[in-house]
Length: 241
Image (cartoon, rainbow, N blue to C red; front, top):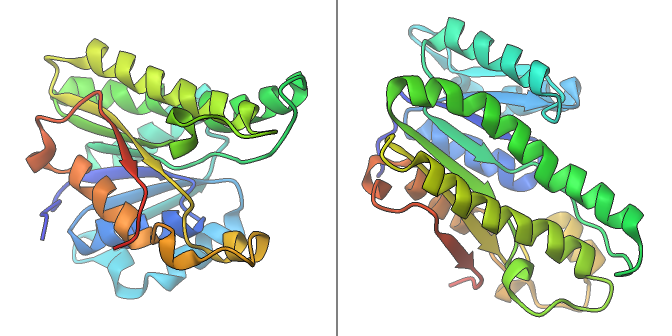
């Protein structure tokens, strides 16, 4: 099992299905986890569901705060709170995002998806990378979508464009951070098996979808010391074994 003891991680989008899985797995491997959430009640429900994992002998291992991650000043303040509590920030997992279908001719849909997927990711990363640079170590993992690298479907261009931007952004960020001990990678899942997707696609076979724990395992590897040689990668995660 990967050892993340002593590491401090930020997970955006933590109250979603994948987020809950990633948070639990980070804690199980020894990390402290900070959660910037939009809905305080959902954040506290998540904290409560973690039970004893959320507490440690030296104090809480989970920090939850209501933060607009697209607001750079708010994210900077949240990062300062993490540093006061734990003295470090090693890992950022960018899970926050959104999905919508829309015409290729509809700029409104594109603007909405850009704000949900790209603006939030860039803002959160800009705030978190500063203490990583100060320590000379960090891991940045962003969740995109397989749609970013496949042929766009009807009414799928705005979503594919936003997720595609995350691929090029991660590649460029990795180049900017080379030599500083910080890696930046993006994972590209196909359909994730969760309640919402099962309801939206009742005729599909979820056995062919990606299980949250399978995707989380890839994310955790990229957060580890063992993944120090992987940066600027766009990794498809497309099938359930």
